Length: 291
Image 1 (tube, rainbow, N blue to C red):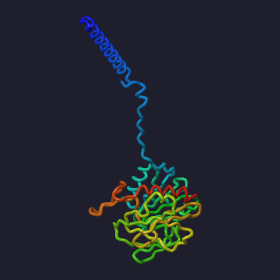
Image 2 (cartoon, rainbow, N blue to C red):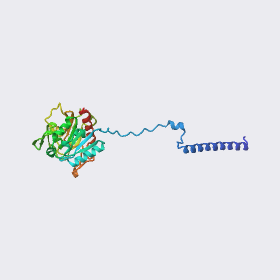
Image 3 (tube, one colour):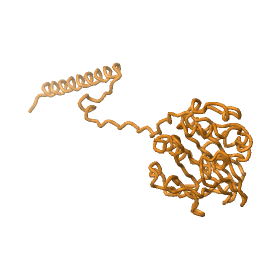
């Protein structure tokens, strides 16, 4: 039988060992905290899987071109605001070109893409004095983009409510005709998936319509139809080469949003605007189409 003294000695030894262990652990924790490191043993920490870094949302590369935004008579202020917002959003450099400059300046020295927004094509017709200056810009390698009224203006023939008018710019040898749908109508637009950039978009999208043209009377071998109105199958967006440059004409408005209940046109990229598609279309126009 173990004597009482021996038993007390064993118990005292165990107490001393436990106290020493507590002291060592406490010292380790204090040292870890003072060094700002984890209290986990190094080998255990090394075994923990690293958390994957959060993926950054993919952004399109900045379009390294300068846009010339025509702001003279005929331009719709609301559409100008939408285009400014769009260009700012995508970091695209732009300048504003006024009434006198578009007729007299060397446009190729000012910009790479000349944009005429929606508005009043008859005012473009009567107040732009030198239409040949715009043609020369495109012939020498510039890109022309016309929305709605800007698209009517670029056609050789403009037909409005059944009446036809000859237009002098004549970048497009066919006819721009309209309106063919109600004003403020959210039009279903069928995209041509054979156009490379449109593979990244659905076969059909929606764009707001405010009286823009559809296009007829063109040589199908020389004109790319990017999109058609689903309601009638007519060409809604076309592109083609002209001289060393290129042209894109749009009947609907991918740059605009709209709230029908309030009859409010929106310019900030929401309410049905299709800015990603518009950006991709411009990038295609200046890279692949103009190549």
